[in-house]
Length: 312
Image (tube, one colour):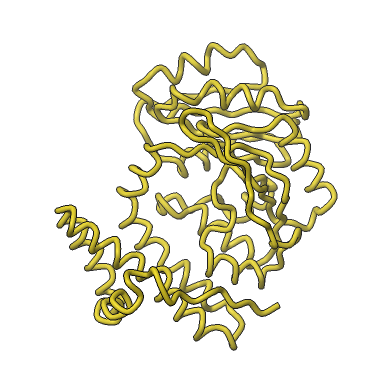
């Protein structure tokens, strides 16, 4: 029974896949299994994985693409490790990543999951060190986690930063895979209703940024709006009573003005179907007239923006 199960779904990952796999196989902490699933790739993803002769790799393949979260749920069900290390095929683990995360979990077993800081790497391999001064506490209480997520969104930022107890994933009955864009955000919100979470300040991975990600984000914006709205409503209910009104105003002025600006941008680009769909979502939430004036008054969300306000 390995201590860690690293799980990864791949779709057409040819460009970055081998480097990502090698970074896992070269970990200083060796007590892990590596579950890799090819989610209907049309490139040579399968050949790249099968060329790796390492007994820790367990490879599976589907002919039809099923999407990230249904595959992660299947891999979680197959995993034997105490801890599940979520991973993406275009990112790179630093050699001490697994060791540091297991050590953290052994010292702070109360954490529902833990996530780490990250450096960035672009499509050409240029590295940008993490320079932000982190004020996030090492152990984040459910109360503070709710406030962080309302103001900043998905707390872990990316699944590649996360290690989580398999028992807790089982307790949560996995990701809600009908949320094709926001199942991870939803999962962190559900976990933090019951458990604190851990943050490792040390950057343990290189998180890849490349043009294909932005293209996918543009296509996903409407799904994100639909799926994130009830998540934010849940977080609003968890805010301290004295901050609820301020938090709602913050969402309107920070988040929904950005959606309105994206709608205007879509009109300018001639993407009328996208603009119409966004307008329809904002109209359902009865925000269009209010957001129009906010958009004008803040120059499209560029000035007079509120700052997060916390209550410990």
